[in-house]
Length: 191
Image (cartoon, rainbow, N blue to C red; front, side):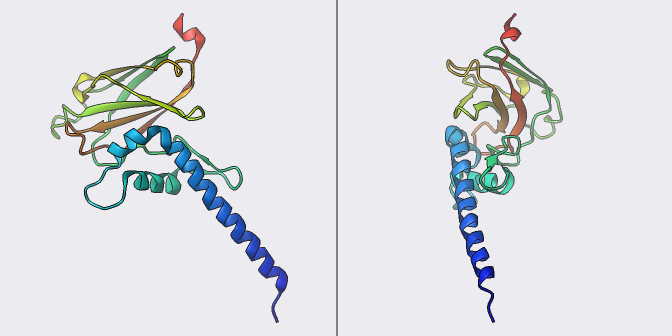
């Protein structure tokens, strides 16, 4: 004897499961679109045949999705914009004054033995809700110990999530991106 009501519950679950998966893919792709330029570098791999966007989507879907259907979102603090084996920076301070973001780190922090003094540094400011992202235009190296980023017009008053990425001089090897936090615009910071 079959219980028909059990079958209907299962069918409803499958529909919601399909909707959940679709929503997760949609939210993940929407999150990744503005930072595609970084993803193409930070997730490039010579070892496997997966695309950079495919690897990034996989990382977001596995690690950064929060909530249950229909309230599913990407948690920016759990998202990774790059993946790799380069060592991260030991950040000392981050300061936002209006459109200017200043970052400092310890340039001597055990990079000498790894010969990483000339690693490049990318700072990404990402206004998730507005789908806008910006990176530093001027080259910054690990040995510099500091980096300045001026947010472009249209982003200067937005709250931004900051991500820090380290790469070798050929941009062939990257670090896992470091999430530095959400930095809110304050009109009083300019005084």
